[in-house]
Image 1 (spheres, rainbow, N blue to C red):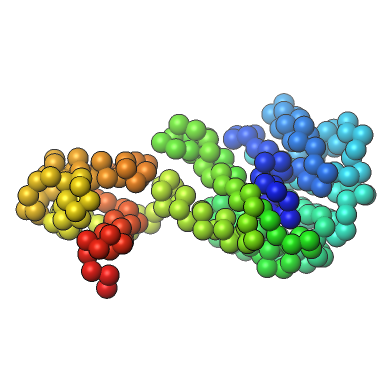
Image 2: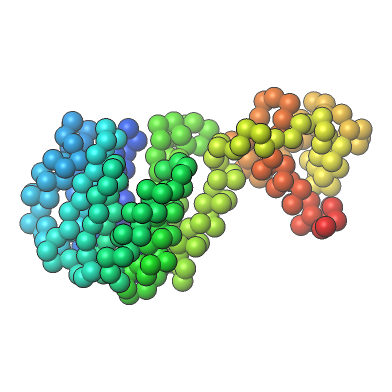
Length: 274
């Protein structure tokens, strides 16, 4: 989501892993988000859950809601008093909606981008949001953006369902800033690297020892063998940099983590910047 509104991520999204997701917009009624999730959990499909919830809201003419169920199916509603341009598009297992937009092209571009983008749900959502922003988005301007993706056990160390949860609460270019933050989140937390993007510990042992010694994590000699002391130093550095979610238990290092280590060494002038 993105809007000329402070901290849109604090109000619009409601989601529950294994159940579904709801976006409640315009003069948003967050209670509808929680109610619809309960209705989905009870077995109702997206359309019936939305209809039941909206019919219980006396302010429904000023509401806008999108619903997606984990069982499949989506639904959306745009009240008759939502500020123009207001509308929605419902596609195969997705819904896109907006109000105070520059025009219908915002929704059309978002829907096309979501359908065309290959990759995980987070990639498709970011692509759609970027397309809507490029098409003009909120006609009042830009202020905040957010994205949330849940997956059972998909969070930090497998101990939560929060796969991605990022907010840009106040920024002149919030969608671009959201992309920047996601790049850090992906590098630090997501385990979705190319399985071929690895380096052998034996091949980089001397370089790792040299860098970690310069950073104060490795106290041994620079002998080029990946021994227990090197492994302990590497794990200590990884934990310091919040990469504990990316530490492997085999003879390899993820390429993304190794490149970060090299870049950090260059930033600290431990290696030449070439």
